[in-house]
Image 1: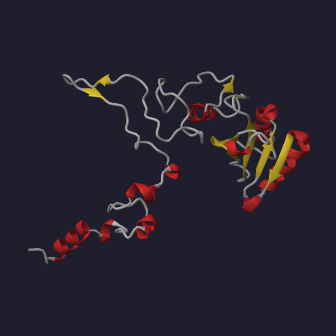
Image 2: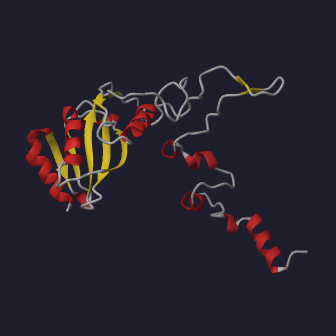
Image 3: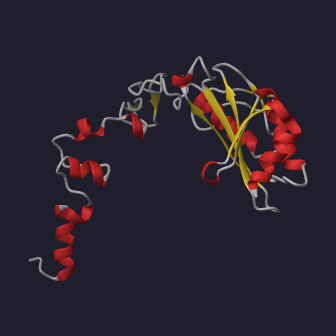
Length: 228
């Protein structure tokens, strides 16, 4: 049924809809940035679309596709409670390019836009309170950009007093908060007896789970009454 929404958008906006896909049942429409709010408003108000349920708004960074295509995909997911169909609306933005806020269309989008700004640095024109929502104001950079240095130590501010005499809070270590996919876990865990996934544990001949560890074996012996 969501395919009918794509047809409605194409008929209504013509060339302002750059592309539509329905791969594996996921209906997606890619629109020009200047049509972002207008298309979203149509999705919500049109009787045949009735996308009154805002689900999520996020972004994806594709620096490798520049300069042929803009770097960022901005994505909003919406659903119709009446018709039970859903759609993903996308637009593509260059680094530093802004787009209008969807807050007037779906009030919940304002919170998600703050997260996108915090993590990717994308700014939303007309947003009433565009500031960081997950990180503190002193944080430098946007950590979900693909070019954000994995070994960058934050916060880049002086140590803070923690209330105890002569004690201060140090910055986070380099290992804290690093994204999963940008860490060479095999190299980091080599020679140890830790694991972050069963597959990596098997590759390195490590214990696969707690149930196979010494601690787990001892616990089973105690429960079975065989421990001295």
